[in-house]
Length: 344
Ligand SMILES: [Zn+2]
Ligand SMILES: [Zn+2]
Image (cartoon, rainbow, N blue to C red; front, side, top):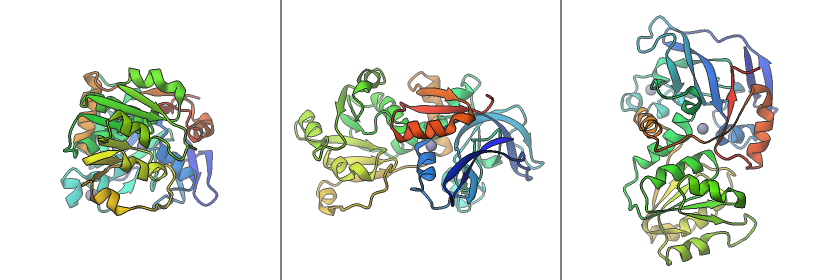
């Protein structure tokens, strides 16, 4: 089968021919239809994320497809089922798996990170990480169900703050644009923060009430604008998929008793943090990089109800995956680019 194989040592991503993987007793073989390209994939390729990455591994964790065959001990799905995979190949029996935290399974392996993922014609996943999708959901929309949309739902399931104002940084990215859609269903005012001036109209169409365009090279960036927009109060919630590059300034935009929802770290820069800035505003921080089954169900309901529309920038064949990397690096992608594994 065709697959995009990442070689950790050289950092190369090479389209290769591999054998269709073998099934163990409790595994499921999925014929992949779509796999969207996540910022996480880019971080691995750039060598920024190294921990737990397999030496030779097929990347891609945002996959949807159809069950091809199942191991003899699999009882919850069968060939022909339309599915997505959760983010981790999990055991199903440890305390975390039993409590719907299989993405933090004690012995789990990240799909498309530690073990092979969805940039391939077939992928083997554990039965416990299979999620059967609703008949009305397309496989195209479904590949974004767990990440990024489920990750946002998981973070919001822990949010206990006010619902007046929210800022979403990295607004055109996969987490950002769907974060705006989610926030617009809950908050009175949704401020989208972006470096892309041309995205203004699209961000408004997705639910932003205000769009703040800032220059990344400007030392002052956006804090003054956000404080001016909120009459120096700051915002109840700051949704932050960007991470270290903007961290101190993001914290500065949050109000007393407010919350920073940290969903990613694009640059991985070591930080000079002043704890007093957080302590004296009673800041709450919610970190989320995973999605449990309940959050995926919520994400599915949001899409089926029309409250969330997966933003697909482009759909391309696997052969174009390096171009996708370049576009992601240039931040010229709004939402996600999907790799269609049935093409070519
Ligand atoms: Zn992802
Ligand atoms: Zn487990």
